Image: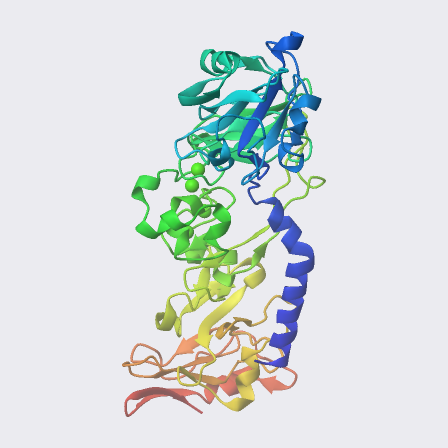
Length: 485
Ligand SMILES: [Ca+2]
Ligand SMILES: [Ca+2]
Ligand SMILES: [Ca+2]
Ligand SMILES: [Ca+2]
């Protein structure tokens, strides 16, 4: 690797780690991890605390409190059990020890402790999937068998469905855990029954698990109604089931990109795989119509400050920056053309010797070459065209990324390609030469004129281009169409 290449790689790495990672991170889906294996709700019927409606569930962690002690201190309250917590309490007649793991059937454990003066008794049941307990009065819905110890009240509560209340909502998910929405984890999402629930504040400032409209069958965080253009996992390849979250897809992983969980509006476009990876037709899957994907370069995001104002006056959403990729995971060289552009090198060996007219900032007549000498013959004196200067105010520079280069006929700095012969050596094909008359490239083959077309510009710095052009003759030399001086 050349020194300049190393330096620019370091610069890119520096930018990536310091500036870009936070931008990328904001695009990621944040799953709610605040989860509990069970809820205990305690009350004391002897003290007329039944039913406990209207009392907030206490959200302290039962797992860190001595067995049995918490309930006598928290009549009418409750607490949350972490996975694997010790929940065998002295005085309980039933064995609740297996309840420190999530249920094997869909649903989440809910305990009711009848905390009266005789003994710690109570019962356990399984709340249904999508059961929510929050500041709205909702009935507890228990499915299947309940386990009850010496407490008709607990049984009644579990089976008839009592109402409970909390300002920090809990919801029972597909993973059979209760997930907590609080002030710290607003913005997190979770899946239940292929719906998305979002922990957020409602319009009167109460925390809610809010159900988003539409389905999210592939669990990528986007419902069909939020712009997921591929949500149907039924068409997925077998290996896609190993991907649990969109982060598992990996940046620019061409193999995983075919899975529906990796196809959504925050995904990066990978040109050439036949998939609209980011559900946006503007970022083309055609590598000759997608500059960033051709070059594998970073697309700048839009900050809140830069974002255009919204119609309804709400805060505009920032657009995170992202990379674009191509299926070969290689950087190719790009120019704009009248029909969009062309990605030199994307077609592999077929791109050797491709000629295109660049437009706009890429104006000029360009030849697509690879610096590999087994593919392109050239003199060492002109090797610098494969390592062009980065800053070229004239806009006529040669353009290289990786081994592939667009070489401008005008001859970009420092040496310039004009009047130098390049031999296109495609495997299994007759080699031929290409030379620039300082304006345009000319191939030497049976269809081309025998002498080089003189350029319109007579010359520069006491060099006569006309004279130079006149020196070149095209003829067949054995199996090689050659320009000769
Ligand atoms: Ca989806
Ligand atoms: Ca999807
Ligand atoms: Ca694509
Ligand atoms: Ca796209």
